[in-house]
Image 1: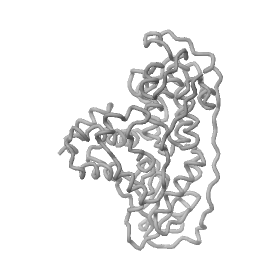
Image 2: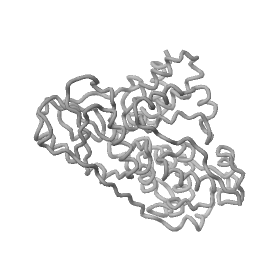
Image 3: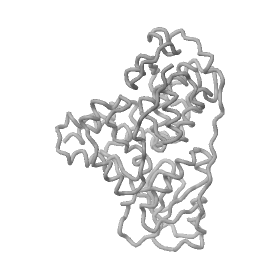
Image 4: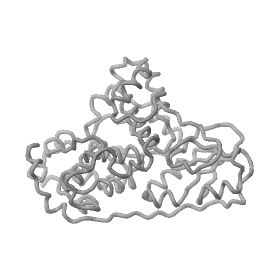
Length: 372
């Protein structure tokens, strides 16, 4: 039996200079040609965009500065637009993205998620290797995410929500909108068409030659496929985290204060100003949307790029009791609707906003701006 290990540069430095170096190494032309392949010329910027260290516009502006022809950059810019699109859906729909959004998932037989996925024992070598690597690095290739989601939802007949939570919990680039809505796209609850991939497809994009797996069938065979026995055992996967040491409210000053959080760790936000900077970690948010210790530690490391940052573990209302609302500034985000103070807009790639039922309706409008 062939063994397959994923030889990948899935490392994610947290210092600002290294992040800037990664931006400089972007190759839009190679990205467009190879992005679907396991060893493609990926940007590996997702974790920094999801944690709000970089905005989609920041990356877009760099791509435009390369002075390349539009057609050679369009695919990468379009992928950035997908991130903005998912966020706009979240802004419009709020917690509705946590359940079947547009269509009910069909043929659901199981809750929880397949234990074979959790334990990386599907028997599909590249998928098992990718999941093991996922636990070590916090990263999954986007094509692999689709394969895993298709196995859970459309082969194993599990509802998408629990597997989506598992993936979100372990992704360094965990973005609730991008993650959950992508799972819904695969499961047929965002659009009404389900996604599946067979072994031939996996072999093509992940440099494998494996045969005789439960996915080694022609596509028409998926229509009447029974759930493979190895996917019948379900797992109620859970994660636990240790919160960092927190400053006390007595250590907070009554002055202009910027509130950072898991989705906003922008080191350039009001850079150089004499302000108080607080990374707010609300346990209630992480109880509702659990993440792994690796993901929390990654966010804490990124926060060290913010000069003078204070870590506060507690509720926003605790800060509100100490600091006047007029002095509290924060960036707009769906998880911040309970914040009070001066709300500042996030930086988007285009001015297109609002809910669009499909990406390309959004993209066709945004493209008129960004393709100038």
